[in-house]
Image (tube, rainbow, N blue to C red):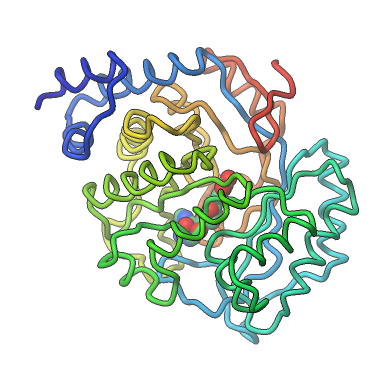
Length: 358
Ligand code: V47
């Protein structure tokens, strides 16, 4: 098993195995790996790169969990702990509409006191601002928590959320599935198996979702491949994932700020490239510029990436953990960034329908 034989298989449209993905991860020639990932991407997407105009709303940072990688959470009463009112949520959605946003991305902590109805009202509040806004809200971890609050089980909880305006799910909370690492990172969080099971039910409920992987902490590259294997297997069954988003760990202010944690630019590009090659049943691989930095995100467009998130506007999770990127990127900046990478900017909606080619 050499890089050359794997590359030949990939170029012929073959599916690579986990040991082959590991060989790719360890291949010293980054540019050869990038070129292979780029060829896979261009076969699907040509020179087109998606982006969207969106706004993140993190309604609360108060959380019953204490994930060691997270610098965002607070306990109720801690300095900096907050919970937005529905008026504040409405105000942000109104601003987003003025800016031409098509999506509101809502995730927050697992608040110990809010009732299930709060989440229904939150969705309805955003939809009341503009029914055309797509609300991509609540990670699988939040869905598990909301199902406990509602007492209805996952499918009926999803139905209620859908009725209130839920359009799709973001991909957060996946972290890394390998139990021995996950137990060190976030012992209170639902298991990887539970995350996958909830996503399967989300897809069965007719909702699309995204999938993430937090990397650059305690995990090995074998753990990354194992994570992607489980996503690929679920995707084979449901086809419900729209995009894979590797999230580069930001170590500042978290309990995991240990020597050597965090990612390098080479590791970021390698991870995105292997993901593009291995996840042959994922239509899109997204570079989240907030965590990667704008320059690596731009270069990643030559390493298999075909999607950039987004205008974002108010990001807290990465910035609390030391991300030194801006809070927002304007539509013009994203368009310029894509063009300067020699690619064609395509604005999309949350469900990957093309809205405008620039
Ligand atoms: O689940 C938390 C991660 C996620 C840190 O679906 C951290 O389109 C890096 O999932 N360093 C939330 N990452 C963000 C997320 C996301 C973002 C953008 C788009 C989409 C999408 C999803 O952020 C959490 C966790 O995995 N996270 N702390 C940190 N210190």
